[in-house]
Image 1 (cartoon, helix red, strand yellow):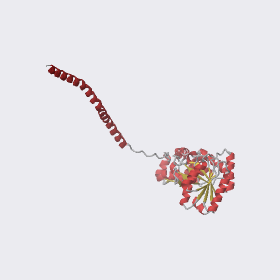
Image 2 (cartoon, helix red, strand yellow):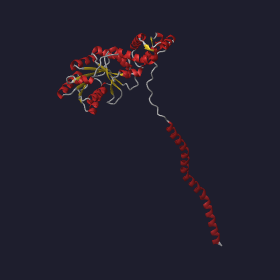
Image 3 (cartoon, helix red, strand yellow):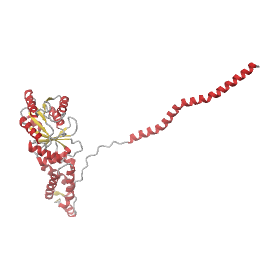
Amino acid sequence: MFNLLKKKLSNFVDKLSKKAKAPKQEKLEQVEQAPKQISKQVAQVQEPRASAERKYKKEIIPVEKPLLEKREIKPELKAPSKIKAVFRKEITLKESDIADMLFELELSLLEADVNESTAKHFCEEIKKRLLADKIPAKDIESFVKKRIKEILRELMQTEQMDLISMIKSSEKPFKILFLGPNGAGKTTTIAKLTVLLREQGLSSIWAASDTFRAASIEQLEEHAKRLNVRLVKHNYGADPAAVAFDAISAAKNSNIDVVMIDTAGRQETNRNLIEELKKIARVADPDLKIFVGEAFAGKNLVEQAKQFDDAIGIDAFIITKLDTDAKGGTMLSLLHELKKPVVFIGTGQAYKDLQPFNIDEILERII
């Protein structure tokens, strides 16, 4: 009897124990399953988002960099001129026919960094010549546009310079002195021109005559290492003319074709530095003095170039950074006001981004 009672009591305790453990086990299983359920819910939320992102990316259309905006340059014929154009093969324009066009042209020139005085002179000369022209009645607009470009070319006519031929026909070494303000790109231009000359079979040596600006020698030295070009240098504070002299002597001894002389960026108001440049020019006696300036510098560049030209003399220009959305109107001012040729333009940061200057390409940017 006692054993039977003990057995029933044991069974009752077991049942109570199972009932107590069941909720704990169930909760434990729920906790273990929770991360899986959360991951499933996250996936359900993320999938539509990922799908939407894929769809969005597919629908994106790459947008090309917009071309430089140009104003519309064309004559607006008034009634009398329109009537004449119907009955005649050729007509002469009236001032009222081109007044609006000349206004737009002047604005276009100014927006392209042409000097105000130069832009006004261009427009006055264009007006005078257009009013004197006989214009074909069937092709007025294209004729006028073409005629404007012809007039501008004439107004900017300068002596052409073929630098490669000039170097090849001269005695060795051909000496080039580079001038210009800080940051215009003289050092990089020297490297680019070296690459261009090397393609023509011409060797170069560099003179680090900028002993004034911090890190200028190291900058030139880095380019020299990349291009395997010999560099002549002294310490900072040394006489820049002495550096140029040593580079010329080294070129003569090694039969090198071209000596390129880098100089410190000069501000036209710093007379001491200008005097230093004059000394370099006297000692080196360069065959060519090239002024390097930025395309977007506008009126400041023209004024700087005039000061350098008056003090030292400029033979030609290289204009840099034409890839920075500049239309290049500064070159029109330089050609018209200083009458010195632009030999090359810089169009990027790579060593091969140096191109011969083409006036038609600049006019096409503006008109």
